[in-house]
Length: 497
Ligand code: HEM
Image 1: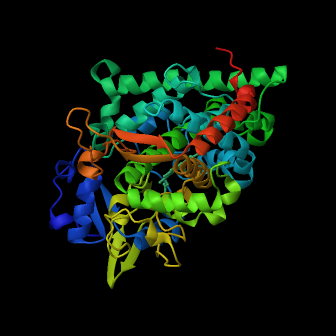
Image 2: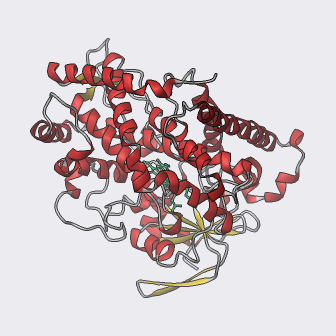
Image 3: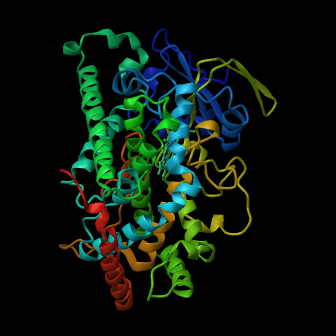
């Protein structure tokens, strides 16, 4: 098998569990990959986890041999207890997973995503105006909820759909961290009764409440359809095509639009937060983007989908942000192998047993100097020109995962990141805030160690910054376009609660 870091012998029953940090394990994994090699084994209890720190190895195993490496490990808390594995993210490779993925394609295949283009553009216009009016309080959940259920989120603090959906995701991201739950090392703990087992009690409570919430959101769409007032949405399409997805029972069916929110909001918003952080720290990057936007778009209209081919530098910024601070830092949910395998790399043969957990640690992969020169630096220029990055399928990064489990929302996310990032860059200048007492500039910490959160999806800790509209003509355009967009978005503001 691939070596253990430092050739440490795993302890009986608990393996290397004591050496795996509970917080930000990806930092230790990266150090181990740098020190002991690009493919390693650590033992979490009696299950081996294969740590991959090289994009080509990730592709070799999870893409080229995807029939063997496309399952998920067993998650006792998030899988068995919280979701009963009846959701795409945790479902083992097989017939149920295929059914979920097929139903999700109705929302995520490029042809469908393109039908949501007007919603994404209108929400972007409103967002720019929200930032203009209140730069310290803005958020980006609305277009995902509008696409999933045909209803807008006006205020995340009070919107009932947002609250219903976010509660479960917050719980999930807080528990779903490798090494953090003893239940994962000792699955039998799940048999302890709930009164002695607070995490089990919490998971079951969230499951029941979560299912009720998902049902009520789908029911609302059904009701609006009966009244002829339901706008275009994924839930509406699913209901219209219910017979094509007859193999999904009610819990699975109601969970589908929810999975857009679960997988799409946290990831996209964290990426945008990292973008703002990078822009604050790199005024030279911003200047180049502004030049490009001024040249191709100007101040009297905002950038659209059709400008993309011209905005080469902005596209490079988006790629670089996905590489530099990948939100799904451990490569998303790990894969699991379903057959024994022998794998040869740089003249050595490794045995990878059936049931191993396969972890493509993006913090190792994206910071691997063999692939990326000065990987720590935020440098969009690395994606200009025709340099290829082996193992990244032409994208230049591995942020959307691999093989059959590759993020089905990648096209959706790329469209939505492009539209939002381009608009933010076009309209605003992001810079360091000043300390009101000393008058000194405040430099936010962008290091993974101190500047980033430790959950399953990682995002910057809140940081102060200054956001200013770039000129008066842009201000006018933002205000005018937001007014028009709000008119058109009225149909999405029809709720029953
Ligand atoms: C910046 C945005 C996003 C990033 C970085 C991201 C990244 C990822 C990664 C790394 C995985 C795991 C892939 C693997 O196991 O190999 C994943 C899975 C998934 N993503 Fe995304 N994602 C993003 C946005 C979205 C959006 C917008 C949606 C939905 C519209 C979505 C839906 C999903 C789903 C359903 C899965 C589970 C797939 C499965 O297990 O078969 N993601 N994503």
